[in-house]
Image (cartoon, rainbow over all chains, first blue to last red; front, side, top):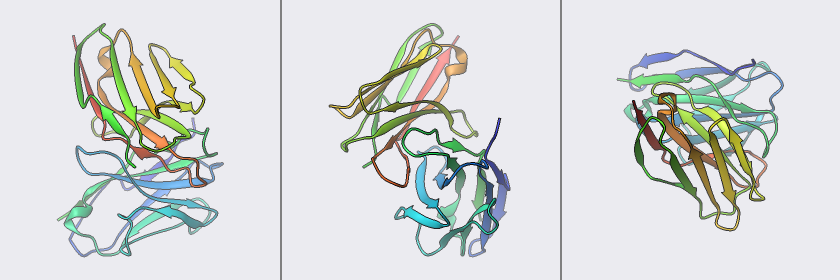
Length: 114
Length: 111
């Protein structure tokens, strides 16, 4: 069964460092997303991406965050200067079609900022 | 914009039934239900489209009341494996397909 894969599974970084989280969405999917989940809380939308550009972003997704799809398969989330409150599980998700299609989640990347 | 789930937590004995509700103040195009176990990714259960559709999968079913913008997840004859946190994700008619998730309902099934 096709799946969304994410690396790394866990990253520990110092405050102020840059972090890149990587995702390989399902190959025939067209819509890509990043969500985050602070421990014990709900899953929060960060950004949606379609046709090589951001289609929507939340207020959480400020100038410290960026996404790109550099090579047609990987989908990355970059946090330029990490803060303690960026510690969370980051989920990549992809979808083949809107409205009726299932949103497939990756296993997540746990980010710990010290 | 965030949907509201109720109850926040449920404790059941094996074999008992539960209902989890999800309400939105916005007109929804679809409602998605996910279950998440501790430390794992959310796992898709089902999608309900506008039109009052009811779906089922094994002993888990759901309904969507378009007039009330409300969805309910029904878990019957619960099993230990049903334990986890259940999230509803709501989708408005848009061209981005983002889901906004409720705060979750923690379900614990005891032997």
